[in-house]
Image 1 (cartoon, rainbow, N blue to C red):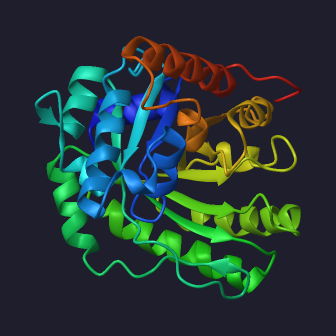
Image 2 (cartoon, rainbow, N blue to C red; image 1 turned 180 degrees about the vertical axis):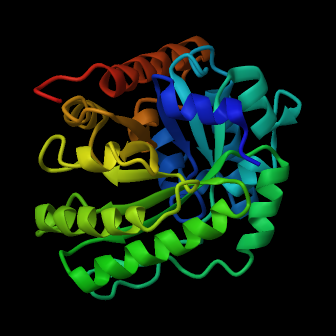
Length: 302
């Protein structure tokens, strides 16, 4: 059953979601940005240990609290690990006031019809059961759209919502994430088709079925406002998509009702060589900047 306190926070509280869910494919790049070269470790075990140490350093920082960071998306290994002697999901919610989410996808299939759909997740029910028992509120799953191909986009959205209903059946809230590549040559048209297909699926949900959406910041400000206002949507969050934090925040601030769910843009200034005070100060600056872009909007709005 969905936790009422977490639901209230995700529905109403000001703030943003931190994406701390780098997995096998994206972890080496995240470590390099942090200042750890590929030659500094050997094997996946060492790689994930270093990544977990970085995440714990972030999660235990004074600024990383529910005052501004209202949620955090975790990699499965992080969900199964500890911070400050407690299971990470419990530590986040009970000690930091941060709602825990879980990344569940297993990566992307090869591109077809201008999109990359998710690979199959054969053990999904077991993963969802474990997540629910550990106090996870919801899940995140990512597909990628590179061209404005309606058949491809329709297939991506259909797959996302099919899995979304499976997730809802476990009492968890799905974050539907069909990412439109910022490098797409037909990005604006792809966003138009995507919005239409998402709206169609949202309209088909029952009154009790609620989801979240994680979308690329649109080309035209407030383009996704109808999705923000849809009765089936708890919250729309934005990924940074490869934009720098400064540019992503500037664009986000023009989109009313959308909050951030940044990964690389959150951690881009953090380095392993920093002292603890330097690390905490740098993270605080990033959190403050992203919080402001998520909560203080500019432009017309409604």
